[in-house]
Amino acid sequence: MKKFQLTAFFSLMLFFMDITAGNAATMAKIFYTVTFPEAQAHYADIEMDISHIKQGTLVLKMPVWTPGSYLVREFAKNVEAFSASAGDKELSFIKTRKNWWSINTAGADHITIKYKVYCNEISVRTSTVDASHGFISTSGIFMYPEGMLHQPSTIHIIPYTGWTTVSTSLEMVNNDPFTRQAPNYDILFDSPIEVGTQDVFGFDAVGVKYEVAMYGGGNYDKEPLKRDLAKIVAQETAVYGENPNKHYVFIVHNYLKGGGGLEHLGSTVLGASRNSYGTPAGYQSFLSLAAHEHFHLWNVKRLRPIALGPFDYDNENYTTDLWIAEGFTAYYQDIILRHAGIIPADNYLKVLANDINSVENQPGKKFQSAADASYDAWIKAYRPNENSANSTISYYSKGSVNALMLDLEIINDSHARYSLDDVMRYMYQEYYKKLKRGYTDAEFKHGLEKFAGKNLDSFYNKYVYGVYDVDYNHYLGYAGYQITDDLAQSNTPVLGLTTVNTSGKLLVATVVRDGVAWKGGVNFNDELVAIDGKPITDLTTALSNKKTGDKVSVSLNRDGLPLTLPIILLRNPQVKYRIDTLSTVSPQQIIVRNKWLKL
Ligand SMILES: [Zn+2]
Image (cartoon, rainbow, N blue to C red; front, side, top):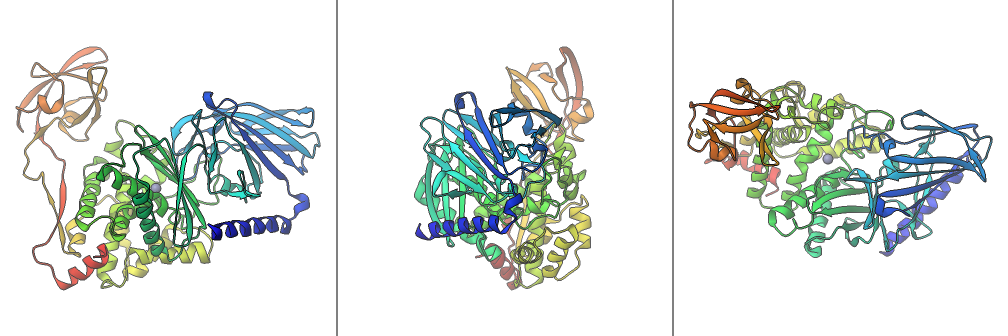
């Protein structure tokens, strides 16, 4: 505690020294006050004071997206009641773009801008305000003056009635938890703020002060949670060789049903189901999410594709490397739990088999490469429709499988001298620390080749730019494991579609590419009424007396009109892999296995 306060004090001093070292005379000063007079109606009220302005026209901008979540979300749509003034004098302004406000300063040196933001979208990347708390996702709340992204700002928060606590990675000003500072806008937009009555507890790990801020209650048990999070922190820090933070905050939103997470430089926001901590599976899944987002503080927040920083807050930022930034992180989120000794090897192998199943059971794996999935995240992954599973692959799961193959390849070829950890540490040291920039596609490939000891052109052509099938037994074989499909002998007939029950109607949610429903002409949103004249309540029951090769009549309602289609049932093409040890394992395979799973 003492150490942290000292560190915070020194950072504060450095911060002020920084400002004075810059050209203070020409630097605008930016001060925000955030209030919640109508928290119950989901509003945050923002007052922005800018002084030392030297320009006749000042353009204020609201980002259109939040880093880490690759979708243009149009945060300006939530802005209301914008006004600008200088003292008692109102200033005129016009909107010059959807997210730009151009103010005529009339020569004033100090102006005040006021606006309200409607905050009622519950997610880890959007702001939510109600009487119980305020979650400030900063990129959708704070406007910035054009050309001043490098400028520091101060944020003062006046809480709603009953709110007592602020949780954020932004440093305090004068030890006041309600006044925070950001050295520049990239940091402000990467530092969410939770205000309310959240349950805050902390732990120290690897010399870093960690804080957990739990909103929404839940059946979490603090002591084991702190112990396990500390193990994850230590293990992930060991991958990179250093932890760049002095202070890190896990902001957790517990809802009846919650999920998702968003990474930041010095914090993360996690969504959880408040009663999920009590079961082993629920607890492991939370730890896996925490491990994922925390791993990002290196992979993507610091070690990053070159396109992801400095950010363009007005437009999409394209990269073909989300299969590394997200996919490698998805790989580490579970193997870290194994490496930290939180889960045993057999548990990890089950999780891994499920990851492989999710790639192999997605028809889109044959149509979209890992690089294309990354590039088109803005229009595909974040804008899914009923055909997404047929045409796309997740850069998370595909990237995770790529990471698995590369990790095993590197361990095997180096006789367990190196692993993927060495690549990540090298890339972090080389590009974040030394060159202070992001990496290109070729540079990351070069980093992998350095430790694999071989050219990876063929790997990239097959699995990064191509859609080749993976020979899992080849790679798992390095560690003396094999996969077996538990459904290989199954002859269960399927229609090749999924359904959703809406108001008592069984509607088609997806039609699986090249399945019998696809070929037979069943459409998305058709209502399934009967099979062979027998009304359907659920698909499993409806097909329980059928077998592969049976010809059935499927009665549907499409747009209110009845329709009957003849369909020949085929066997379920889905796979369900499990990973087992080979019956005979060589000394080399044991060496690889022990290195891979830290046994
Ligand atoms: Zn992620």
